[in-house]
Image 1 (spheres, rainbow, N blue to C red):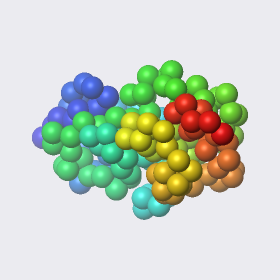
Image 2: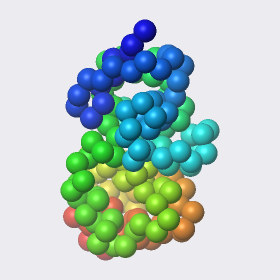
Image 3: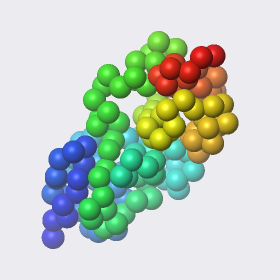
Image 4: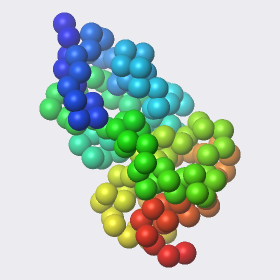
Length: 150
């Protein structure tokens, strides 16, 4: 039986089983491959998406829990979000493993906290692992996108 989901501002009908993690529906059924598989246990942050504007892990979110919930993926940011521009400006991308999850966590932070402090950034980004260790550039890009000095 099809399940209707609100993805990136549009309604889509999916045929996956209700317990299927959102990550696999996004990637395999909807071909929205910007959300990445990392650990599968909600520990690395690679699969971070927004549920009603809040960061969440798609690998542990069953589609049955999404009735009436607005889902936003990295594709939903549109490609020219200030964070995406700052990411490139600060040479953040390296291997690519964590990029979409990092940006989605940072986007939720900036949406909720216009001028985040280092402590705000640390708290918001603590669940995102970067295998390349680009944490200082990530912090600089977030500050740049938020218009914070330093």
